[in-house]
Amino acid sequence: MSGKKLINKVEDVVDEALDGLTMINPGIRRIKGQRVLLRETVDKKKVAILSGGGSGHEPFCAGYIGTGMLTAGVAGGVFASPPTSSILEGIRAIATNNPAGTLVLVFNYTGDRLNFGMGVERARAQGLKVEMFVNGEDCSLTTADKTAGRRGLCGTMFIFKIVGAMAERGDSLDSILKATRSISANMGTMGLSLGPCSLPGQGPLFKVAEDKIEMGLGVHGEAGVGEVSHTTANLAVKQIIDHMTKSDSATRIDLRAGEKVAVILNNLGGTSKLEELIIAREVVMQLEGRGFKVVRLYAGHMMTSLEMSGFLISLLKVSDNLEWLELLDAPTSAPAWPANLMSDNNRDRFNPEPVEPSSIKVDDWKMTGVKLNDAAAVKVQSILEEVARTLQGLEAKLNLLDSGSGDGDCGSTHAVGAKALLEGLAGLDCNHPWILLQQLGVLAERMGGSSGGVYSLLFTGAARAFQDQVGGEVDPLAWVRALRFGLETVMKYGGAEPGDRTMIDALYPALLVLEETGGKTGSLTAAGEAALTGAKKTATMVARAGRASYVSRDKVSEEDPGAVAAAAWFNVITSNL
Image (cartoon, rainbow, N blue to C red):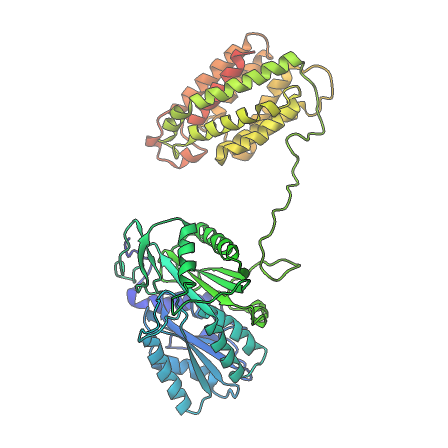
């Protein structure tokens, strides 16, 4: 992992980031010449709350400035505590002429304790009413005899939110400080990392082997429990919860049966949203599988470690303090606090049951249209089976053709569609073309990707040729019109036209042959040949649609795999009629 970053000058990263935050959120103002941010309007009749620490943990802490959370925040250099002079400026800005007082929330790191402590002492010496609380809730270390104590981690965001809401409603400094102590005593945090982060202008801060995970580390990459083998999200979350609740650990969090908990799942910066959501699912399932109840869950980038790939889990026990839930739910204008969409009927988080689909089922078509006789229906079913077998046999060839202009899965995608067709063959209504084509459109969706969408459009559009026919025998030309309607639908929504190097270049020439001959006997063979010829011509065409259109022209020299597949199944049909 390199230290590559999009910055201007290393020495300017913090100041430019703070300016960027205020440009996004004009309700947050910066004190000139200082790395101190505060609300645009400070209510001097209510308790003010200030926090801060090193930069590189964004959105902490300035992102939590807003009504109902922090009043001000002080930023240090990247992973460095802010100087006492800046902290004092921040305290002065919100504590001067404020009889309600100010609470300074500090993360338990030596530099922060020293610098914020000095700032608080100087503020008190100037006659300002200030209290300070140092939070440490790290559960990774199993003994409590460390001189520095438990590290302060993202569980502190619970304190920000709850006491911020208390301050907003007008609670006293003494009651807020008492609640702060209680919140800290009822929570724990632990996490892991898949890899290191790097400071601006530097390389990685530490190393994690490709097959390992660093467990219990801090937000600066400082070591915790140690390394374990890389594993699944399920087992990774299990190891964390096991360790956090370990009975012989002095830093454990004690969860009794039926305990209600609020959870923060903190993305350390480089974990994809996809992984984050999978981990969120695991956290809920595993906690509730152990008999606990997750009543609130907040997930996202809350206290990061630059681009570190990993996460932290913070648990807050709320069973004996249900008022905390009301305070967590209280409104805030702080831009970084997650806004969860809760149920209209239940404020507590729960696992919602899936709603029943409202779409028409494949076996529930109300209109039937014209009907084929039983012999013709049997033949149609036989042709469809052969189409599926043919596409399965082309899987390797189509994948090879696709490897030069796509992601090499065209054959696999068509094989998935063929499998879906074979599995659904017995349930298809081969007597009624209108129903059959609609059913094929639904089955095609199982292919996935753009191919599934294209074929679903093709069959659904083709069905229109039989939609208005109520009875009697099937007009042979209706099948020709069906191909026309299907291709027009694909071109309308897919954006491709003849000559763009797609499956249309196989089927459109065949359509023209059928339309010119009126679908007469002998024209089917000619139409099949036209499809094969059209597919071959795609080798010299410039791709103007599909994934191949993004690939350099000199790398696209073979036939389009989609066109080859279309020509193949089309010829299965023409050779059997």
